[in-house]
Length: 122
Image (cartoon, rainbow, N blue to C red; front, side, top):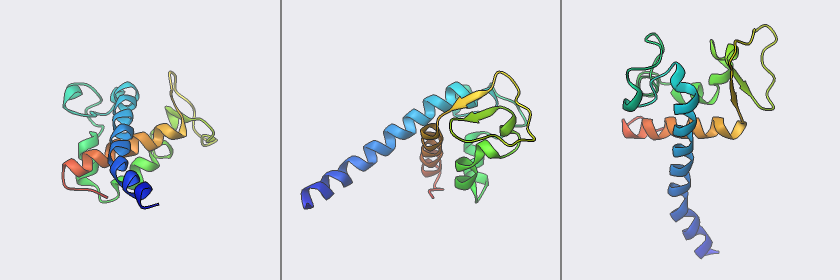
């Protein structure tokens, strides 16, 4: 049992890093349409849309916002999550972003990594 606990503790950071890396790939493919995800796409996105770095460094509730972004304005118009019904009063704009629930976790893991890099860990 003790060996399992040591193994779990040793592999947890690697698993979190893998999830964050997956979140980065998803964010680059889907979120970078509007948001600056990192320095590599700093000249893209919509100028009035906050970067991921700004979200995690400027907002105290950044973690909740990343966990629930798909339900926050303006995301219901462009994001669809598999298994989660969109709000009835929101018209979908095409092409929409299609995500799985596990993608939401990966994007949140990316935000956690960005926050940790800037001293704002959850």
